[in-house]
Image 1 (cartoon, rainbow, N blue to C red):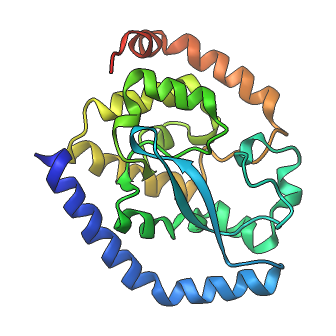
Image 2: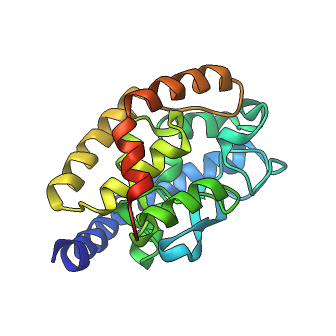
Length: 223
């Protein structure tokens, strides 16, 4: 009942309220982006959606126009050099993600769900397909985002996504939403580019050793 009806109703209601409140700030932010660097205020990109169907996601543009459009920021070399001055602030506060309320209203996304990835992240996409995580609408935030965010390995992200999709409830969504504010306020789990890749690999190795049960869950899960 919650997953198929109430969740969508709350998404629509939340998106309408958020967009109404953010309408004026959106205009102000768009002006700052245009003044700070050449290019449009909004950034559109193909992301993987529910049931393996791509959709166009909306974000505030935070990077130089010459930056690659088909790669995740964590995969870019010297990503910090390609992020604009205003963009750096928007990314640190996650304000760049707010236009995704438009996607929520359109039905492409939910407020809570697995984060939509670029189409080139084939490993994570395949893992989500195999464990059933692609069966839910992608979200502005999700279980993986409040348990490590960018610093998680693809395996851990897929594990969290699979666990979430198999146990969606109002209580879980509420807890994720509350924890999201905490993560954003403290700027936890953010990684820009490959510059910290050695530390991330070491962290992921320790994490994978601790989460043996989660790995088994992913390997055994059936669609």
